[in-house]
Amino acid sequence: MNKFLTTMMVVLSLPLAAVAQTPAWNELKGELKAALESKGDPVRGEKAFDSCVGCHRKDASGRTSGAYPRLSGQHATVLIKQIADIRAGRRSNPKMEPYLDDHALTAFEIADLAIYVQGLPISSENGKGPGTGVAAGRQIYDRDCASCHGGKGEGNAEKFYPMVAAQHYNYLLRELKFIRDGDRRNANPDMVKAIKPYSTADLEALADYMAQLAPPKK
Amino acid sequence: MNKVDRDRSHKAGPGRAVVVIAAVLAAMLAGPAAAEDAKTIAATVCVACHAGDGNSVIPMFPKIAGLQEEYIVKQLKDFMSGRRKSDIMAPVVAALKAEDVAPLATYFSSQKMKAGEAEDKKAVALGKLIFHDGNEETGVPACVGCHQPEGVGHVIYPRIGGQHATYVAQQLKNFAAGERNNDVSRYMRVTAKRLSEEEINAVAQYIAGLGAK
Image (cartoon, rainbow over the protein chains, first blue to last red):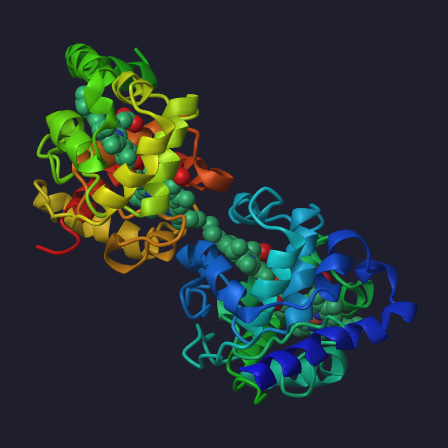
């Protein structure tokens, strides 16, 4: 337990080293800063997660339909940033917002939740795509996406780049369209640039490829 | 008549008569009996509506046996302060002393809630779906997340498994209309507003059949 905690704390404190050259899209201020600086407690996090289970499921595997994303195994830094962005209105999510706005969760509870969820095992029973776009998707991914999201879709905790492997197909596709079309306002501007030229068929191929990537080892 | 008014008038019918009973009981309580312990209060006052062990047999009165102790304390305090409005419970708590609250909560929470049975069997399938999966289209979260498997509840989430369907449906309508607004973090007001009338009745039927038989 103690070892687990220590590891988690080290993982969480890593991004703070990068504070100095943090670009504006993930500027560390307000509750994002408070949450990242606090040492999350996974035991408290498990309790706080009850209010999320109704949509994201007990094991945080989300829904294979893609209506609700998988959260398990996602980097705590990414989870914290996304929650802070949703609360600040930078990423719109009317279905979830009332369950995690500031009357429901404190910045410290966000840190607890994130540490708990990051430690949950990742299911490979996620919602997959048709499979026909995997080859084409891989080509685009390796060229334009791997530099940030990692060769195996593992993401990058320090830089707030989400893990994209083994996420539900329909969720990935929806987010790709949101980011391309400017509907997800919190996205990294370089990511928006990378994705702008692609047709919907390209995005389907990309989502198809990412959904079938094996859960990254941790 | 809009939906909310209809619900209100439906509530007011049997409510009036009970207010009278409650006033009588309250008068009794005001006497020396107030010094008695929780069990006596339960057997002389609460019994009229919730039964002596808290397993009410009247569908519009909630079962309070086996509810979380913290939850009972919170509800009694909310009735006392008017944060939870009830024409029926208001005179009852007015006659209670502040120090009666904790022992009453301890007593009723240590009783076992008896499961009921779904009367509308056809509604149970939809109710089960709502309870375990919610509704992705409309963003209704599954009840099981907060209220736990079998609806046993924990921490701030009350037991609902085994509760009377009539009471559950009425509370959901009250939350949706904002008439009951004492829920922590507005969780239930948000959730109930997303439920259709059909889903409310179905999930209430399913909940009634949960828990120990």
